[in-house]
Length: 397
Ligand code: ADP
Image 1 (tube, helix red, strand yellow):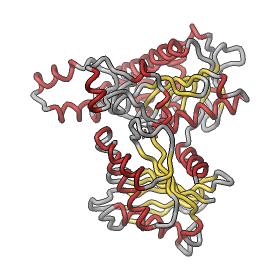
Image 2 (cartoon, rainbow, N blue to C red):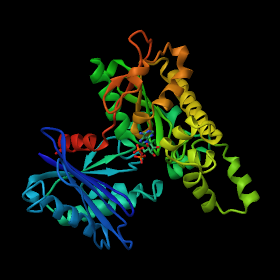
Image 3 (cartoon, helix red, strand yellow):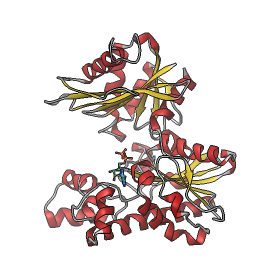
Image 4 (tube, rainbow, N blue to C red):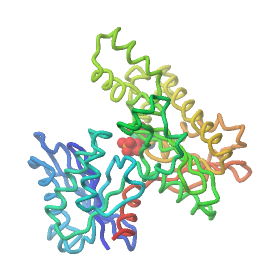
C-alpha cells in the first residue's frame, strides 16, 4: 500500500509517499510560502529529477492539490491515480493528555485535536488545516493522526509535573508533554532491533539533536522522561531556542531591554540557543564545528556549553532509569556531527563508555560507535519520522 505522509506547518507542508511493502520512499517534496507571495512546490520522485515550480498557493487546499497533481502527473508522477494511495498519515504536534497513541481521524478526533490548540497555538491549527484540506481532496481515503507527544504519555506523574500551583494543571493542563515522540520511539526500537535485543529489556537514552533538540529516557519500552515540556522550549540548548533557563531572567530582560512578554518569547525561541550563545555566528553546527576548528572562541564556547547540557541530561536520565544500556544519537546534529558526539561522550567515563573513533567518523548508517569493551553501548541511529508515521498509518488502517 502507498501511504502519503503529510507534515503541515503554518506556511509550509512537507510530504512523502512511502510504499509500505518495501518501506521505500517513492516521492517526496515540500510546499513553501503557502498563502504568501512567491510560493513554490518541490517534487522529487525517487530516482528522478527534482522539480521546483513557483506557482500561487493561496491556501493549504491548493498546496495539497498541487502535491496530488505532481504525484499523479502522467510523465513524472509515481502513481496512476489517487486510488493507488491507500491512506494518509498526518503528523500532529500536540495530542495533550487525550492521545497516548496514533488514531484514525474521525469527526470526534478532529474535535479533540482542536481542543489541544491552546497547548500548541502555532502548530496544531496548521495540522488541522492540512487534515481538512486532504479530507476535501481525498474524501474516501482513511486518514491517521500521529502525535509528537503520544510516546511520552507513559511518563510518570513525578516526571511530568512542574513545581507550580496544582490548580494550573487542573484548569489548563499545564504539565510536561515532550515532543519528537515519533523519533524517540522509532530510534529506541531500532536500536534494540540492531543490537538483536528485546526492546522491553533495555534502558535507552535517545539524544535527538537537530535544530530542535530533546532527550528521552526509554525504560523497558516505555518513555519515562523527556527534556521538552509544555512547549518545545524546555530542555537542551537548541538551534535558536534557549532550553532551560532561570525563569526570572525573563523579568530581568523585560526591565533592562524594555521588552514585552511576546518580544521576550521571540528572543527565547528565535534568537537564543547556539545562535545567540555564539554571538550570532550561526545556528548551524557545520559552521560551529568549522569555527571551532579555526580557533573561534564563540564557536568553542557554544559547542562546549551545548555538549555539557546534553551530558547533564544523560546523567539525569541514567539516574531516572537506575542505569543505562544504550545511548543513541539521532537527527541532523546527532547523525552528522562526530565532534559533538565525541565531546558529549567525554563526560561518560563513569558509564564505562569508550568510543571507536573510526566508527564515530562514519555517516548514514545504524551503527555502534562505542568499542566492544564499552560498558554502555553508544549508537548512531538515523531517524525516519516519515517511515514511523507510515508504519503507524498502515497498522491502523
Ligand atoms: P529539524 O528537523 O529540527 O529542522 P534536523 O534534524 O534536520 O533539524 O537538523 C538540522 C541541523 O543539523 C542543522 O541546523 C545543522 O546544525 C545540523 N547538521 C546537518 N548536517 C550536518 C553536518 N554534516 N555536520 C554537522 N551538523 C549538521
